[in-house]
Image (cartoon, rainbow, N blue to C red; front, side, top):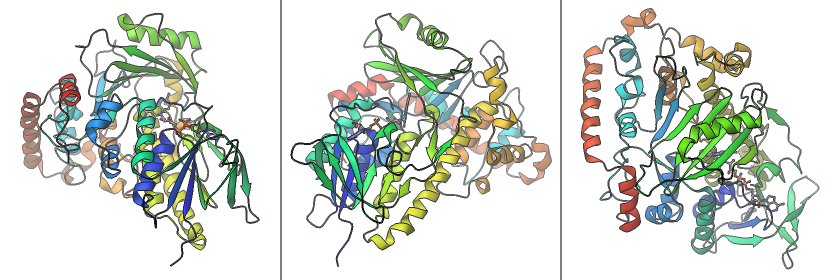
Length: 523
Ligand SMILES: Cc1cc2nc3c(=O)[nH]c(=O)nc-3n(C[C@H](O)[C@H](O)[C@H](O)COP(=O)(O)OP(=O)(O)OC[C@H]3O[C@@H](n4cnc5c(N)ncnc54)[C@H](O)[C@@H]3O)c2cc1C
């Protein structure tokens, strides 16, 4: 059997490039003689973006699959454990009396809403005395409040008491993956600038030209554009149309800063904190020796000096004038096709939606896994996979935009024009608006999420909607929920499990110190 597609060239060595290289090299057996050859070319002159520090739980299974030790990863990437995100001041500002913070945890360990949806039973409870939704239906919000880690040192690598992902140093992570790809997975590495992309008569790419002394051309059968915002293939070669989303997501600038801990005893949060501001929001991510903090905002509503001042005010006593604040322009949107001919774009080259739910690295991972699983071995198969890939990832981008918009458009904040405009129905995508209208008389159910590939599932929507006090009038369908006793038993069980977990699990800093000193048991 002869295969026509035996060599993949990846352009770019950021998170997207090296993660794709690792997933493809492992899945397509690049280390063996019969496997698909993978080459990655990276510019020695253009630095990687290096800001993505929050991840999703899928990274755990990916690291395990590509053969990485979790202990090594945590030690070499300054990684910590992440159990979700806390959204502060999104519903109302803290000066108002109502709930000013809620969690979107990662865990569905306590129960899955796909099996038994507790939301209607929570909605039936007395508004004044019930627990908040996140604390009623799972343990993880309470673990985050208590600063507890999701596992103990005696547990094996990648196993969990509670679902978890990581916070990590993005530059160290790309380096870590690079070493693993080259040393263990058989990936060839070329340090060079790609200067030209050469097409054949069918407009398929045949080779790229570089400024490398020996490898002036690199021919391959399939090309992956991980060249970041430059989009060397998707934008500069094929000029694929761009779907602008700035009428839905308003933020266009980020200010990022690294804040060292004052002492090596300072607690490390086990969740990302996202605090809403008058024209954006501030992320706060705890790594081993520093926090990554940044203000994502819309320059239409505040200028850079106001945005900087809000960031400094947020950091408070931990701010000092010698910290470097980096400005990053955000270009929201995505290409109308990701796969074209014998090429596909993954990463910033494909598109960008603000990091409010840290979804980018998840999408790189999902894209590389789909390509690995469906890699067309003959050119005649290319179009079939291209169409499916483009459908999947267009849906994933659309749904990501909708879920991010949800955080803004159900807010009750009206304290600045930014929030007023964000809640204006004209800025809400039609599909999201239809869902929100439906959910006014019944809470979301699994039937609203019938596509297995939606990046944000039923549980995610429930956490955000009811964290933000979305008003579902359960009276319309009250008779449809007869399992009150079963629901109460589950609420009680979650309560009991939460107290037990809080007692048993270590604090994040304690667990990190144990990992640095002893490591987990290897799987
Ligand atoms: C402020 C901010 C915060 C973010 N936070 C998160 C987060 O918490 N979680 C998350 O999942 N995502 C986050 N993201 C998104 C995500 O991490 C980034 O989109 C990601 O870092 C981009 O990675 P990349 O590999 O696509 O591009 P880059 O890191 O830009 O890498 C591009 C690569 O292409 C190479 N290259 C370019 N041109 C050439 C050429 N001509 N020849 C050879 N090589 C070339 C460069 O050398 C580089 O290696 C964030 C993004 C921003 C802006």
